[in-house]
Image (cartoon, rainbow, N blue to C red; front, side, top):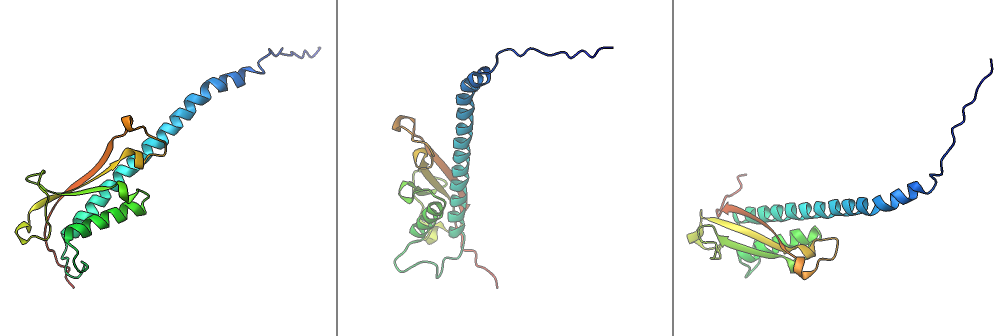
Length: 160
């Protein structure tokens, strides 16, 4: 018996893979870059929520001895929030912190006012998307990311 070796004839496909990759690569790159950008938006949104919660927790604590001379509770809360976000890479100049009355959102809330003890207030933090984006954003496509939380103004003391 004779061994038959069947040889398959190769067709010229040498450049086909390169052409297919040239068509697919831009789409894959766009998907990967889009996923990276969406991850950054999600991360920034999480940071805004966390900063709002940490700022509001300050208002729920006994603030005695925590404020510098002449510093108000609202200014301390605002500086703490902007410092927290700056440490996470969000420029503090782009951060807007509002402390609002829960019952009347158009009214600012003074956390130091004794008349406001045990009342609800809202800490709202706004940052433009362009300041957290990895890619340039035109002014027409820019929008604000907002994190907010509602807390009760109180003076809970730590027991020892």
